[in-house]
Length: 129
Ligand SMILES: [Zn+2]
Ligand SMILES: [Zn+2]
Image 1: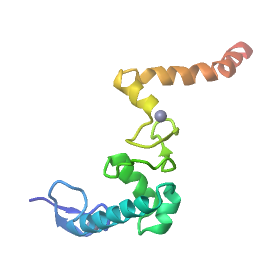
Image 2: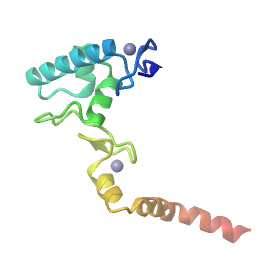
Image 3: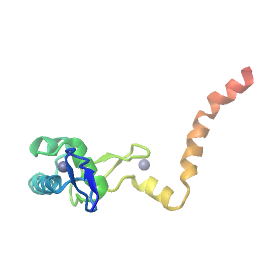
């Protein structure tokens, strides 16, 4: 079994699939449970409030949500930015829009859009040359 440094606490451990050690997995599971219980009591809470009310940090909660380890049911305020465009989303790494774009293999479409937006400035640059 390969030995690795735990990504979370830095300790050496026998790597078995996950990139964090068994102790951290235990801690994470406990924190996840805490978050779920907090959300049950406070369904309207946002991520900052959950971070304050539990042992989890804001980043950890976002990571749980992005990894799909924390699934939201009726928590309209638990929104975090899409990794691609920054639009607030509630599941996965990307917002619904980006997920669709990526699924269609149109990864370039948004890039083109962004280019169009800056085209005006660039166009003037070309003219003044
Ligand atoms: Zn660890
Ligand atoms: Zn997005």
